[in-house]
Amino acid sequence: DRGSVQNSPKSYDVEYLMPVSLGTPAQQLNLDLDTGSSDFWVFSTLLKESMINGQTLYDPNASTTADKMEGYSWKITYGDQSYSSGDVYVDTVTIGDLTVSTQAVEAAREVSEEFTADSDNDGLVGLGFGIINTVMPYKQKTFFEKAMPGLDSPVFTADLKSGAPGRYNFGYIDDGAYTGNITYVPVNSSDGFWSWVSPGFQVGTTGSFNNTRIHGIADTGTTLLLLPEGVCEAFYGRIASAKYDASQGGYTFECNDSTTPDFYFGTGNGQMIRIPGSYLAYSKIDTSSLRCFGGMQSDSGVGFTIWGDIALKAAFIVFDQGSERLGWAEK
Ligand SMILES: N#Cc1c(N)n[nH]c1N1CCCC1
Image 1: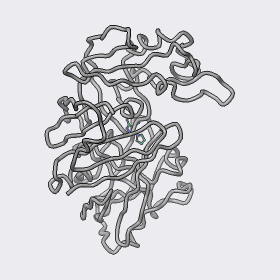
Image 2 (image 1 turned 90 degrees about the vertical axis):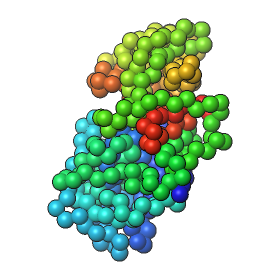
Image 3 (image 1 turned 135 degrees about the vertical axis):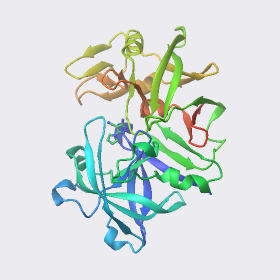
């Protein structure tokens, strides 16, 4: 079996949403596929009105195939301190023509203000590893883990684009979606993340390659690229107008600074992925400013590097759960 679904970026590519069908008759919600977490949770009719702001709600009582998992609950807190919690139902879920008939759907009773404020986002499909699923008393499998046995190949791929729709594919690799070769690197899933080691980086075409191993995770649910302080300093040191601006909480530089170099990261076997300098001028710090907030920021608050959407949208990525490895290709 296989599946393919379009993803659509919200403004500034802050997140990417995809249509998902839940229950019978189908209820369509727009969800955020997040490889940095492993709960499948949705806005639901269980929520207090005050926590809803335009989102589409999953109504388990309107689904003939929904069964409540009595005595089960969930509560998740993300790295940015946003959170959600609620009850658990088993129901049928279809993403891009791929159906899982008994998916644990985590119906929210409570969401933090960040989620309430994000009116286009109806919930998350966590496609990290199931060991970090928060359902109690027994953790539940991710959508991919449920689908995997029936797939042609135990992989899913992410093709995120800058300011344009892309695709998530399940169970196969679309050889037309990338250029050159796919370089595979081993994944350590013991923390539940798609953790891998980059051999290093290069700033611009003239800079030398810096052989410094960077431990990090491939995370579709994080907007920016969070890298070690030293890497940020090497990159921003090459941009004339760049500075660390404590009032903005990060590096900023003039959006049109022509000295902005591309950023390359190693994936192994000498292969590098090129992130265009333009991706790193993330967003204007305010409407009247000529300065942009950098798409690359320090990972010092996190403890490991997060290869978020800024990096992922420069590549075609194979999340190979069958072999616990990541495949990187240019496109
Ligand atoms: N923080 C954080 C975070 C992450 N590292 N991956 N996904 C995240 N979120 C998904 C919804 C809110 C935050």
